[in-house]
Image 1 (cartoon, rainbow, N blue to C red):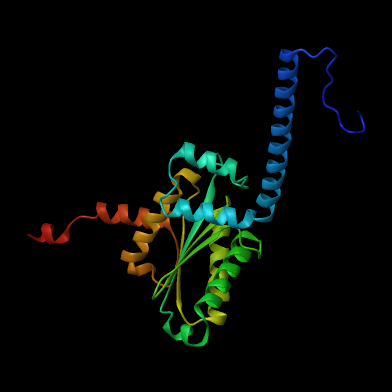
Image 2: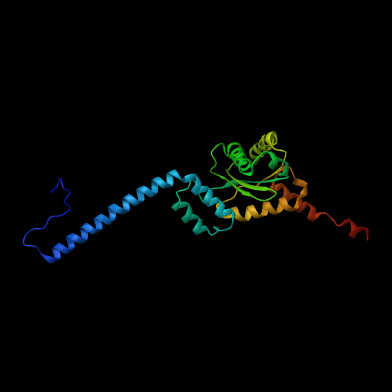
Length: 232
C-alpha cells in the first residue's frame, strides 16, 4: 500500500460516513496537488516572460489603464515584478522627431530596437530592456525610461551621453526631459506633464532639460511685471 502511495486506510466493516470522509480527503489532496503543479508551471512561465510582463505593465501605466494605487499593487504582486510602489524612480521622457531621413536607410523596427537598447544600457545599465516603453508614431517616436532613483546631475550626464550616441547613428532630433523622483502612482500624470512641455516649450527642442528647471523658469516668468501695462 505504501509503494502504491495509499493515502488512507479503512477498517472492515466499512462505514459509509468514514468512506465518504476518506474520499473527500482524497479529492481535496488531488486538488491541492494539481494547484501546486499549476502554480509551479505559472511560476516558471513568469520567470521566462518576466521582461515582457514588466514592459506590458509599464505600458498600461503610461497609457492610463492602471492608475489606482491598489490596482497597481495587485498587478505588481501578481506579475512578480521587480518594482515597488513604495520606492522613487526617475523618469526620462524622450521624443525623437525629424525621422524621415533616417527612415529611408533604417527600418522603423530596427530604429526602435536601437533606441530601446541605448536607453536601457546608458540610463539603466542593462542592455536588455526591462524599463523602456516605446510608442512608434507616423512622424516621431516617444519613449519613457524608468530609471532607479539617483542624483539628477548624474542623470543629466547620462542623458547627454545618450544624445551623443544617438547622433552617431541618426540625423533625427532627440529631446530628453528628466523628471524629479516620483512613485509609480505618479507615473501617468508625470508623463503627461512632460509630454505637454515637449509639445509647447520649443526652447527645449533638441535639448536635455529637467522638468524642475522648466517649472522654476515658468514661476519666474509669472512673477515678472507686465512692462506693456507699466508703460501705459
